[in-house]
Length: 604
Ligand code: M6R
Image 1 (tube, rainbow, N blue to C red):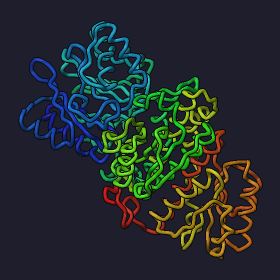
Image 2 (cartoon, rainbow, N blue to C red; image 1 turned 180 degrees about the vertical axis):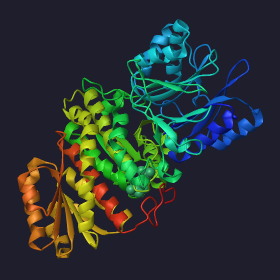
Image 3 (spheres, helix red, strand yellow; image 1 turned 90 degrees about the vertical axis):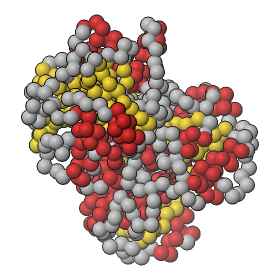
Image 4 (cartoon, rainbow, N blue to C red; image 1 turned 90 degrees about the horizontal axis):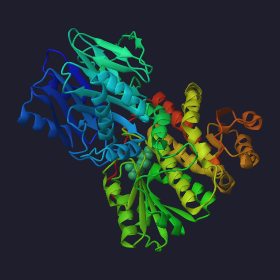
């Protein structure tokens, strides 16, 4: 996720904003840049790669200024290059812009501007926004008014900071959904996308509300709401330490990332799922490939493999195309049967997993079309695939994957919907997906209950994770979370398989988590629960609310209905993530970096 910093005041501004974005490095980025006021105009220096590259450039150029803004970019629209790095100028190099978030209607705006003769030098949506602001500035000559007017044309979630050549003592900032905070000093002021970047300089902060527009000078900050009405800023005094602030007040990255899911899924859907239920995808495979595909093979590891299973349920049920989901480490040595009419979908958060990359190369060598479902932009898998759909989840720092999982399921669902559209298959999945961010936020309200259940089962040595259909796929992911961070041994399988062997392990003290998000199989799941109860195991049910489930389970965690069993099952993974997190926390485990595991597995 990108980082934003800004400073106006008597001190050396470039050193301050550089330090500020260094403090946001933990968020992940792949290029960085600064814009600053100087004699005769605005200077911009930017570089792809790590901050050290920008530092070298700054050391060579030695710019000095009293006003600067800085940005660290995590590539979305356009790869991580010098040209795509922020800041971006408008048409006349008079307005400079940095931006976090996504301008959803950038394509439409780019067409409009191109028709008026605008020329772009990058592939970014940010440059389009800079041109929209520049066009407004030509009309009014007032930077604040230009940003206010331009914001009315921009759709999406964004935080944006703007400078003008003609106004060297002013910074204008606007936010819509993406966070932006302002810092108050004595004769100096600051801004940043996240509080840690402000803490070495000031503890007095203003958190901008949705739609707010701020104008910063040395003397002070004025704030107006989305209707252009001036408002009195609410100044907060921050008393957290910096490490806590990096985690947004959460004790660990994992729990922060669990709570980011409504927003990361919203970002994943933004600009793709349209109001009429249709899907627009950039950088996808040609329609011809979607049309001719007769079989899909998905390859992935760990959590990404579990997301693939959800994708398989969706594709098979909607499109009636057979799907095989393969562990990448097995696929590469199994001499897989691949045909020209197959499609290989390669799923990876990091885009660097060695086995998955090798599986992708094998599929390509057999002449099969390849689609990447990847989080990290510009990663090896993203580059190697014929087409790539990014998760737009932002960097995932915790080794245990959470928001990447939901991002993978939703990105696969969008691909399935797109294929249905191209093949003329009608489906109501779009409505369920549109509901998902809200349903996720509702589901996360069960955190207190998950904590109480974690206290009850704190000393358990063995847990079962069971379900039917897509709930069986969710069970695999819930169990993986539990073992990797809380170090509890788990036994996971479709619920109906239990009596064919694993049931022998059930005794008092054993805990079984049952998913039940499909009314069609509820009765069967209840019978399986009774088998565990008869052997005095403890049962935690997670699923659609129903008296039968509440009655039979020792503990029951309800999840709201999205109208789709598969989407419901993916939603039921959220309480499983919370349960694993709280149990691990109670047991004093190393949550973000569990023993023996690495975030990116780049070895076989
Ligand atoms: O980066 P990838 O998605 O390719 O990683 C795949 C697995 O290594 C990963 O999902 C792993 O299972 C996680 N630690 C699970 O939380």
